[in-house]
View 1: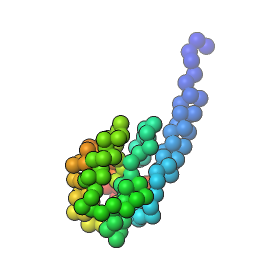
View 2: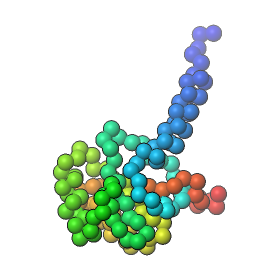
View 3: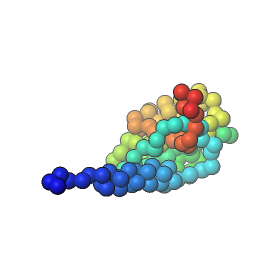
View 4: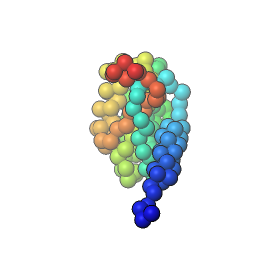
Length: 131
């Protein structure tokens, strides 16, 4: 047989993919929020620790685990963006928040210098095809 059998390689890669997909959401710094459910998969992570902005159901905004007033948010984000190599930020918003509040914070993230915003959700939720 003169051909290389790639089946074991593909099997190992699929197992590693599943392990990383399960482990990646557990590596983010957390404040307890009820995330909305979607069928989307997790984003790959970089070498730099991702910046996480959290919106709680009571309207508080947190950068990592530090509470920040909404009027100070853009200034703090600009200071953080000046020190970071990446413009990636993860936004964790409680599923019970109005859409307007989430969009206001996303606008503040953009004004603060972060254009690569990832929305964090829980997996296993409903899909558009009803599944």
